[in-house]
Amino acid sequence: MELNAIPLTIPDGANVILGQSHFIKTVEDLYEAIVGISSQVKFGLAFSEASGPCLIRKAGNDPDLEAIAVENARKVAAGHTFHILMKDAFPINFLAAIKACPEVCGIFCATANPVQVIVAETDQGRGILGVIDGSSPQGVEGPDDITARHNFLRQIGYKL
Image 1 (cartoon, rainbow, N blue to C red):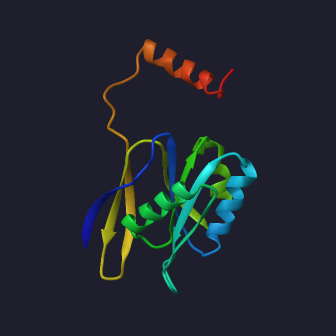
Image 2: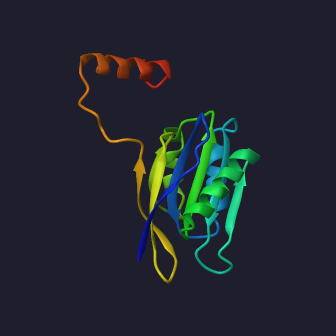
C-alpha cells in the first residue's frame, strides 16, 4: 500500500466540500440540493464512479469551478467520492441538504483552507483516509480573539 498527500486546488474566494457517496445519481441529487438552497451560488461538482465505466461525472453552473472540481477528482482518483467547489456562498448553508442526499455516506471537509487529501493506493484502487484541513493550532484564544470571532460572525450575518 502507498500513501500520498494530494493537495486540492481551491481558487481564491471559493470553498470546497469533499465527501463520499455511493451511486451515479449523486451528481443530479447534489446539483438539485445546491440550487434548491440558492440559485445565486456559483458552483461546480465532480463525482468519481467506482464501478462500470469508472468515469468522473460532472455538473454545475460555473464552468471554471466545474473544471477545477474535475481536476481535483482526477488528482485524488478515489472512487465514489465527490468534490464541490462554490463561490458566493458558505458551505454551512448547504451541508445539511448535502448530508440528506440518500447517496451521501459522509463528508471529509468543507473549507476554504488549503487541503491535503490523504490517499491510500492498493492494487484495487485508491481511497481517502482523511484530510488535512488548514494549519495546526497555534495557541488558545484570549479575550481579544473571542471579541474578534463574535464580530466576524456578526459581520457575515450569522449572529445579531
